[in-house]
Amino acid sequence: MLDTELTTRIMKAVDSGFDDQTALTAELVKFPSVRGAEHTAQDFVAAAMRERGLAVDRWRIDIDAIRHMPGFSPVHIGYDNAFNVVGSHRPATAKGRSLILNGHIDVVPVGPLDMWTTPPFEPRIEGGWFYGRGGGDMKAGLAACLASLDALKRLGYRPAADVVVQSVVEEECTGNGALACLQRGYRAEAVLIPEPMWNQLIRAQVGVLWFQVHVRGVPVHVREARAGANAIEAAYGLMEALHGLEERWNARRSDYPPYGAVEHPINLNIGKIAGGDWPSSVPAWCVFDVRVAIYPGQAIAEAKSEIEATIRDAARANRFLANNPPEIVYHGFEAEGYVLRGAEAPEKVLREAHRAAFGTPLQDIATTGTTDARFFGLYADTPALVYGPNADAIHGFDERVELDSVRRCTQAMALYIAEWCGLEKV
Image (tube, rainbow, N blue to C red; front, side):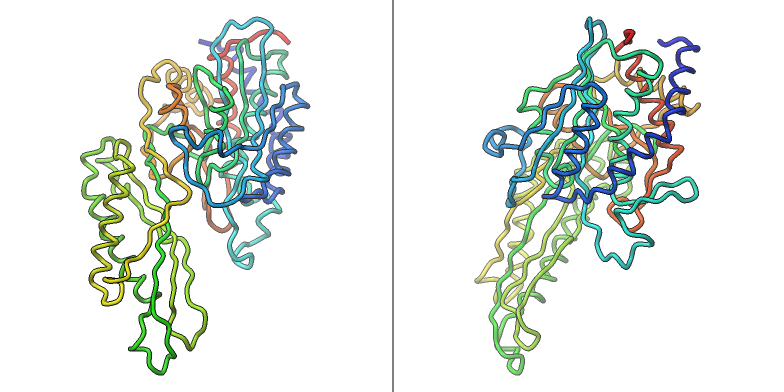
């Protein structure tokens, strides 16, 4: 355990560099790194890593190299600009325990710009909060990975073990970026992911499935609408049936600890819809996109079977769809849930670091979202701690992250690195 004097010095070193850390976060947020456009942001991250003396590995993800691996999610869009960036620190003499600091550079779309108070990629600070798309989820956390190392260097120290900083793509839709890091050979004795988690530690996270439902109809002129089959209206019946499945799964939450105490752990979202060609024609087609959670331990194949049976049964109630069943296409997330187990040693270090930074015990949470932690915990036998700052409206309008929370979480991260990895003089 770090002595009181060194603990205080490390925390003050974070404070003295926090303006620079906030400026780094702002520069990251200025990049509109939505899916397919992350490469320029990754170039910036790579340059920031090189400035800090990290050995940089930047590569385009090769789908063929990872599609056979457990945890792979199917994709239907190109990977021409899907670059991962990893910065590695090697100590003069390895004495401590190795660590991966993992964060994602991709952000979700911003939606209608007129519903933002200020432009989403023009960061601003107001009332102690940092605003901008991706500021919370999770560019503040990614910047904190570098800032925690900066704080130690400011005191004349560096980790006495291998430390790998990963900036990955695809976290918001497949997780294939983190999977590509495993395929590349990056391993460590623990992983820390500073996702926005309200200054708490994720104890459990759900899995996620993405799928599309393709519905067909019969187009006719609207003057004889009853002679046709309206694909859009038929789709709503299928959506209602899927929400019925959602409630049945929620009723089973006591079978999947620690979600028995979570009020509504399974959330199903109709996230996107398109259909029809002309206002005066009965629509011949409709496609809607669905995201649904699954429990840790709930098999993906079994969940898919229940989804397909639900769609099939609902289609039978429709005169046209009974003989023209909808098509289900899986694309994006096929993610298993994950429960943090066997992590007593890294957890103990993080709990002590959090108490030093916040003055309160570290609380656990079973989240209804997912993170890249599953890849390390399920497929690399490596405990993955997800712990990050207080953020609000992630994926929404006026996304924001609390700066004091970022500062304290960075203090905890720097203390964690110092204790877990050990320190050596620069």
